[in-house]
Length: 278
Image 1 (cartoon, rainbow, N blue to C red):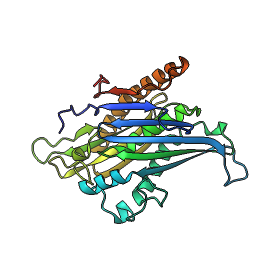
Image 2: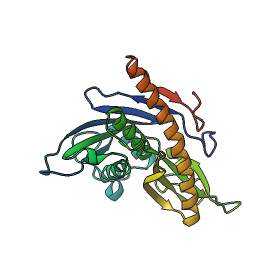
Image 3: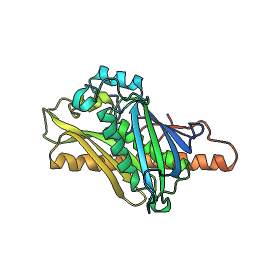
Image 4: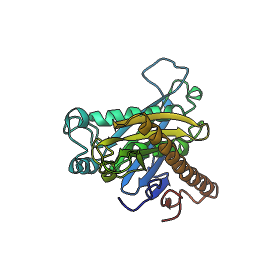
């Protein structure tokens, strides 16, 4: 819809060390989707006397501005999917149903990458704030949170990169699943996803640790058959690898700047699937 190739990412911007007093932090933009993550810890757990492994806690919230935008685009409808009115919204109140579900997804995607056995009786807290949403915010949150964990000095098995795709079956022409990497909200085609002119389709997200090839999380909404899911997962994995390359490059640049006493710099802005400068 925006002129990108189907296998091309939206323009990406990454910055690190963006929240003062946090153990680690990161900021990630996928064009109009903007996510900020702060990591605190490791620190002693108070809920158990002893545990052989550490625990990762994640709190995912939409800013009030992002919630308003979701309501305007029809993605926020309240009730079972949207949760209670007045909750969440980046404040200290209770999370909305959708935010709780996203918190679990992000936490499960990251847990496999953190060396929790080296953090006995400790907890690492990850706070995600979606500042602006235009599709793909859960995937963006996972990638951003992995960078924040690395910036905090938490020992990882590898960075976790994530990508969402939309798959749809055109209503006319050849009956063949089409898949778009990193869709915007408009490209997702509404709450069910995958409605670019077709009746069948959905959104599929995948989190991947490319260093080991391990898929750490998969999520889906909408209607896809086995062929559609297979094709979507292939494209999501390709997209995650592209995101990982940008994450790794930014992290290495940041480490070089820190080693040279230059601080975190001004971030790095990249465009499209090939990672070219925008």
